[in-house]
Image (tube, rainbow, N blue to C red; front, side):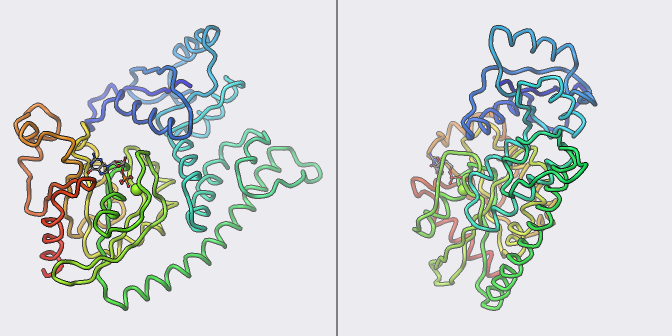
Amino acid sequence: MVAVDYVDKSASSSNWSTEDSLSELARLVNTIGIRVTGHLIQKLSSPKRQTYVGQGKLDELIGTQETQPIDQLIFDDELTPLQYKTLVAMFPKIEILDRVSVILEIFSRHARTKEGRLQIELARAQYLLPRLTGQWKHLERLGGGIGTRGPGESQLETDRRLIQKRITTIKKDLEKVSKHRALYRKKRQMSYIPIVALVGYTNSGKSSLLKTLTKSDVLVQNQLFATLDPTTRRLCLPNLTKILVTDTVGFIHKLPPTIIEAFKSTLEELQDASILLHVVDISSLHATEQSITVENILAELGIADKPVITVYNKIDLIDYNQFLSSVDRPGTQDFLKSCPENTVMVSAEKRLGLDRLLHNIESLLLK
Ligand code: GDP
Ligand code: MG
C-alpha cells in the first residue's frame, strides 16, 4: 500500500511533522496486517477538494504502479465522501482507505463487549452511508444481513436503504445496552467508591499500569488500540482507601470526531472519575505532542477540569540524567518548566515509582 498525506504550507500550530503522522499511520496499518511499500507527500495549503492530493501526484502513482502494483492507497485524514468517490472511480482496482477506515477496522477487530461492537458497527455504517458507490463489497463488512433489491431500486438505493435500516436497529440495541450501563453507573455512584481513570495516548502503557497497580490480568499489547472496552479493577491504597481504577480506549493524533462520537457512552465513564491519571510514554520522541493531543481531547469531552496526575511511564527506557540534560530533546524543556507537583515518573513494567503515584492519589482524594 502507499500512504498519502499533504504538508500544510501555512504555518502549522502543531509540532507533528507530516512524516511523523505518516509513520504513525503506517503503524496503524501494520496492526491490520498491511505492509506499507511507499509514501507520497505533497505541499499544499489545503487538501484538493476532489482528490485530496493533486492530479499530477496521482498520475505519478499510476506510473509507478506498472513496476510495483499497489493494493491499497491510504490517506492520512478523513476523506470527504466526494474525495472518496472520485478516488474510487480513478483507481477501480485499488482499495481506497483513510485514517478513519483504518482505525475503524482496528476497532472492529478489538472490540470485545456487545456495546463496543455495536458502537463500532454504528460508526462504520455512518461513515459508509455517504460514501456508497453501489458495490456489494461495502455491505460485506457490515454485520447486518444483505437483503434483496426492491422493485425498481438501483443497487445504490438498496445499499443505502439496508444501511439506514441497520443504523436504526443498532441505535435501538445501543439504547438498551446504555440503559443497562446507566443503571450500573448509578449503582457505582451510590457506593461512593472513588474512581481513578487512566487516560492517555494509545500504547502509552495505561493497561500495563492498571495491571501493575491492581495485580490483575489485563490485556497488554504493543499495538495501537489494543484496549477498547472499559476495564475496571479494585485497588486498596496504602492508607486503606478502596478505589476503582478504570482503563479505556486510548487517544491518537487526528482521532476522527466520528470515533469520539461512537465512544461517547464508553467515555462517559470518565465523567464519574475523581481523578484522571494521564499516562504519557516518556520514551516516545513525541511525548509532548501526544500529551497535547490527549489534553485537547479531554477538553472536547468536557473533562479537562478534573484533577489530573501526569504519569510519565516507561522511565526504564530512558537514561534519566541524560534525559534531563538533553535540552534538544523534544519535550524536555516543557517538562522541566512545567514539572508540577502532580507529576510522577514510573515504569509500569519494572514497577518503579508506584509508591509515589499511590501517595499522590491518596493526597488528591483527601483534597
Ligand atoms: P495502552 O495502549 O496505553 O494500554 O498500552 P499497553 O499497556 O498495552 O502497553 C503498550 C506497550 O508498552 C506494551 O508493549 C507494554 O509492554 C509496553 N510498556 C508499558 N509500560 C511499560 C514500561 O514501563 N516500560 C517498558 N519498557 N514498556 C512498557
Ligand atoms: Mg490498553
